[in-house]
Length: 119
Image (tube, rainbow, N blue to C red; front, side, top):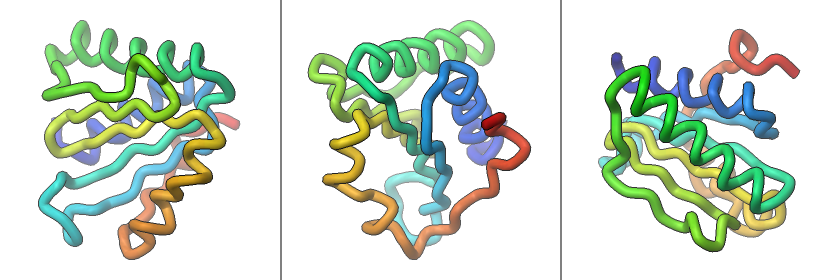
């Protein structure tokens, strides 16, 4: 599976689990960090953890993919999941506003999610 397909699969998993404000930003032309950021918001820290758990479980079972690392799970205000070329950011809503990754990576290419997001 290429990195765009992986990013879209992660977005689909997050959408099905009720994440909000989903975005995929292409960063591959701007940085060596990876190819895509997947951004999602959660209304509370319990949901943040549930979203991260769902992504990890589904990718592990269905695709035999394990993250290189997961950070921020304990506090759950910003959980980062590193899947090599795809970096997943799951934010508590207020934390996302404060760090504003969309603004910091405004030169990145936003991927159309109209075929993924159901709301």
